[in-house]
Image (tube, rainbow, N blue to C red; front, side, top):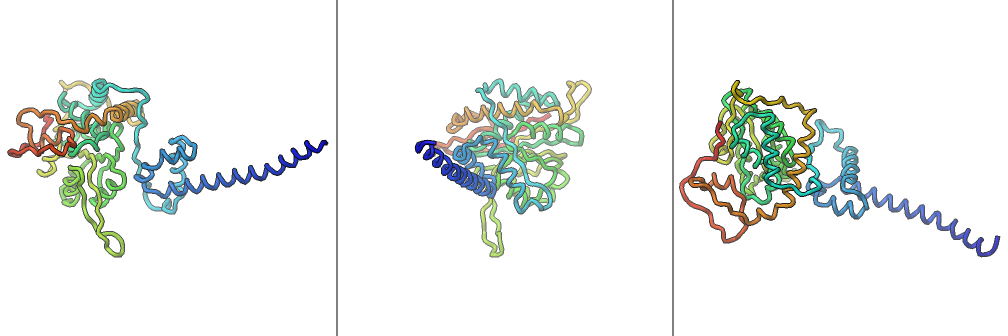
Length: 340
């Protein structure tokens, strides 16, 4: 072996431990970053996930899976119940036309629920609203009410749970759980069977009333020192119930009055959760359209039909962020109805 080859061999042998050390150091740094991200709140993680994935050289979806696994090993993994999940559709890869999207939403809703056309339109528009809530001063509650059971309210709620942004279906909830969930992740709340618990919960009605407008909040004391803290209540909410909503909440709602299907009504399919995977594609198209068109809502101020004023008008139009916009005056109008 020549002197040159001996020197090369020595350098190669010396570089191997250095390479291994660098790899081990990088793995340790990556592991520390995964642990840090897993300890963040859902909101804070959502804000950092894309930049963190880029820094780590990973796809965002892979980072999500790693962090989710880390969260499963967290100290709270042994608590009762299970962690909340707020699914977000991956935006469709190509641009989507708004008219096509709305027609598609109406078509899939009509497939499972019997409602008049204007009610279908209202529900489809509300689905899109859940993706664009940041561009609305008001987020109207979607009130799905009926005089009796078996009118399609739960089916409509199930369809919505596959279409809206960050769906969180529930059949019961306390006021304290609601405002904490909203402050944590601002999901789209889909409350079913509200008539079984709603009327006796003044606190919950007050929370949902306050969240109707941007900036809505409640103040609660927390910790051993009873420190006052502000919790956001602003989120999209759909409520299904037998009977009528309380007046203050009805006034803040787009109301869908439902009834049982008659023999003369079109046939509908039963909602089978194992056969509606295609709804995820519709949700992806809604997400893509919202991303591409969000800024068009920033200063929109569409004219309202005659007689639709005050809160009823607020429930139906996006919020113009122009500081010169004035608040309309006049007598209070009832909430818009898609009666049936």
